Length: 259
Image (tube, rainbow, N blue to C red):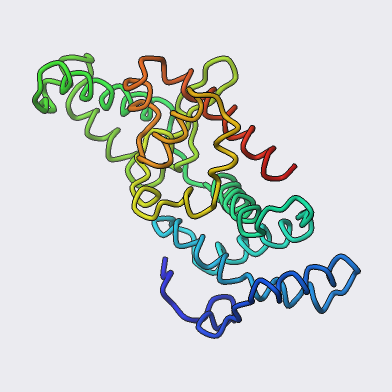
């Protein structure tokens, strides 16, 4: 995906306007009065935000034009639902909505599927490898993994290769009591860690609304970039519990931000 290209969907991204805080406030006031011209200017003035967000999905196989269009839909939804009286910055409210819109698109547009049996084999091999590495302090060979799980080395290789490209980050891999864990929950978010994404969204006040355990999980997941499995091992609870607590914490934070 050519994120760095200048023109996206016919828009010259190098010439996107940058609105000041006062300009945004004035335009949004006009939008609330039904001014469509102000709405269009407000959308255009926030396209840089969409552009910055789609860079997070640089590993996606989708075209940058498609992601930009979907991100714009999320931006428009954010504008139409934003309540300026809450005292929350528009970008703080808009970013999760734009990301959510893109994630739904990627999930729903994932047309290439890997059979359940192949995925099961791949996950068994991955988990066995992690367990053996932890127990023996050395990386097991493919043959050792095959012996451990009772599956041929050839079948393991085929299964691991099968999930490398086509599997979506939003593919469910485990469900417990209605709480689904996705592939993305197993991956450390290094980019988030380097860019301090959550800090840039000014969510410190929302985090204060969480209890000690929830706050710790959010910090480990989004500030330190740990996977749910790593958090579970660190805290001493199950991954399913981490998933439930994380979802509850994010719901609490979202409720605080959007009112």
